[in-house]
Image 1: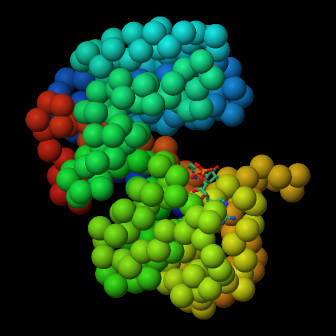
Image 2: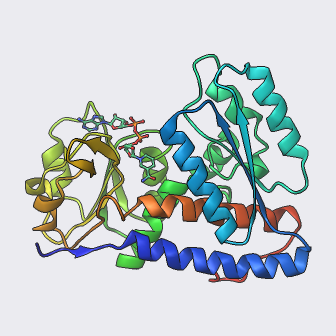
Length: 291
Ligand code: NAD
């Protein structure tokens, strides 16, 4: 193996420490902590773990966490009514509804109901549109985490060839938009892409967000490339990414491990968005470079 391992866990811990410091500054100025409300519908075990971890990280950063649980058979109106209450609650700066939602609930209607100013997931069409046209807004957490790791590793990304594999609204598309905004030349590949191997081979940056264990092969990677593996796949051998880690690490200059790469960045960026939302809501600014 020759690649450097991009330590997302350490980077996220340092980011959370900076967020905690700025949270203190906010508390002193505002007389209250930034608040994040997390809504869990049903009892899916993986979602329950995510929600618990978000709650813990919120407290550890010195923020106020509000957890709301609704039964798996709750009707959509009940969830929308809760969102309405959170939208007007002055103690709540950020609202996150844990996905996936039970079948009887229309996820689009739920996303639309969240006040865009509290949409710390960055899924509301208002924020999606802002990202698309380069206006300030909330950027989805996992894509923001990918960008921060890339910038930390590579500095200026201008002119680099980037290939993003996967075009989902929560990962692939926003990653492609962020990389476009940082002046990369971006190819967005997906399930209908022809000859993915040759497309990946020309990339200085590869971001894999596919959801298929180890589908990106080491032989596809250009020597010296930087590889960001967003995939989280549960297999009999444990959790693996979308990239064949061993094969890719032999040729890449740097690569994120799974776990311990992009994963920890997601919650850190959620806290970052919550802190930003809290500041904007009361007209305060975060010092340049503080995050
Ligand atoms: P998704 O299923 O919504 O999208 C997958 C994308 O991959 C689709 O756009 C599809 O076109 C593309 N794809 C499928 N097969 C392909 C193939 N053979 N070749 C090229 N492209 C192909 O998934 P998602 O929500 O974007 O998540 C992707 C992965 O990232 C999953 O493993 C998920 O668990 C993980 N994830 C991790 C985090 C994190 O915090 N690290 C957050 C979100 C998602």
